[in-house]
Amino acid sequence: MAKIIVEVMLKPEILDPQGQAVGNALPRLGFTFATSVRQGKRFEIEMVGQPTDAQMADIHKAAETLLSNPVIETYLIKVEN
Amino acid sequence: MAKIIVEVMLKPEILDPQGQAVGNALPRLGFTFATSVRQGKRFEIEMVGQPTDAQMADIHKAAETLLSNPVIETYLIKVEN
Image 1 (cartoon, rainbow over the protein chains, first blue to last red):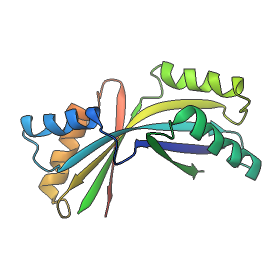
Image 2 (image 1 turned 120 degrees about the horizontal axis):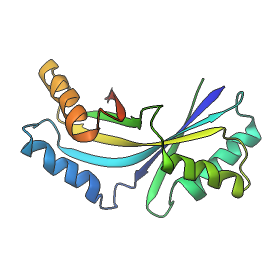
Image 3 (image 1 turned 45 degrees about the vertical axis):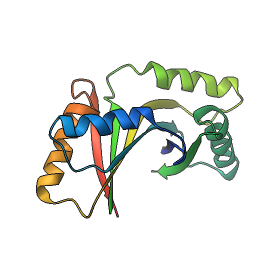
């Protein structure tokens, strides 16, 4: 059984109000370590067996069409065993 | 400059309607690879220099109080350089 991780983040040039809200809240709570915060999404997809080449192509297609909006977001796919 | 990644996922026993919606949409779009989908959050926190032990303790505290809800979520902290 493989686990496919798809990480979706807003492109660097796209304003990230959620991340900014977290970044603004940190110092209010006494946490001063952060210079910038970006918030994104993370999908854990379980599948039976190891992904074939055709399945990897499908995963990329799904990441592009369903899991992310390529106009404003980038995605990264990782396979864990 | 270090990048702290905080991954926040719902605990396995907590219902995940967002992940289920994605899991239900995949076969409708012709993607049949997934047996289960869970959706979570991902924070990219930039900081100056490498985190000290005190800063790592702060990061854990922030992850526990601001970035996740420990009642229903788990978090994982990674440090990238």
